[in-house]
Length: 354
Ligand code: KG4
Ligand code: ZN
Image (cartoon, rainbow, N blue to C red; front, side, top):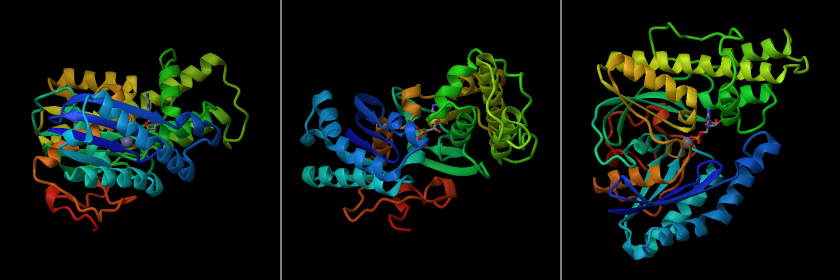
């Protein structure tokens, strides 16, 4: 089964062709992240216009790189929620055009679920059940996965998402946008114990996460008690602050992952989403899995950040269940696995317009 996946939920435009849900035949990503550095974050209108410029060309190039034509495709999958409405609409419209032209199934995909379907890429066999964490710019949630594409929300952040916290911490440290990769790079040569930072809810008997206090604590530590002093950290001080912040996030996520997996009695864990690119988190999760004798499923970094191969992978899993969404399908900014709205419903039972 050959599936074209399209992704345009935020500031990455991406297209990929995936065979049988795991073999990546081609994949392309055009990121606008650098363009948004001067704004300090994504400007939705500009992002949407960027998708218009990139999407058609990327989709055609993905087909040509995969050595196939539209007629060879068995389904078109697209990230349809959650995300920036204007951005999502570009991918959804392109997917409708391709599906109508080809006369093949159109499959609307939940972007958050797709981050976890990325564990299937380059891995022909995946054994369920498992507990998985999606940590990205908009999500930091734990799920119980009982079968491909079937997930139950267990808990997650009550304020910022982990990626959002990384981005805000980077802004506090004057590192620009996107902040996660900048903190990751600096943390490599910093002392994670240099600054004492809180690990909120670390010992709570649930899966709630909170990063708001951590972010504020960093602000006061580096910019004084009112959080308004100029940043006077030395280059090494900056590395130490980045390392201390990253260590706090990693400690929290690993401790809660341990709790989630033990509560659910599983011996496989998985991570996905942009924050799963973080080297500290990858090392921490590997250490956890090794200590507990668990299997860790961790996509390669380019499949953790927003990409279209994960969309095609989930699209393929859903296509095999007979899923075929109508052309009246619309994108949705919310309404994802985050709200646990679809708990207990199989992918085919989920409403297109809830
Ligand atoms: O999954 P993603 O690409 O887009 C969303 O669906 O949100 O995640 C983007 C988030 C951003 O907040 C970015 O700063 C963070 O992932 N991120 C990282 C790293 N790479 C990306 N955070 C920490 N360390 C990284 N290496
Ligand atoms: Zn994402």
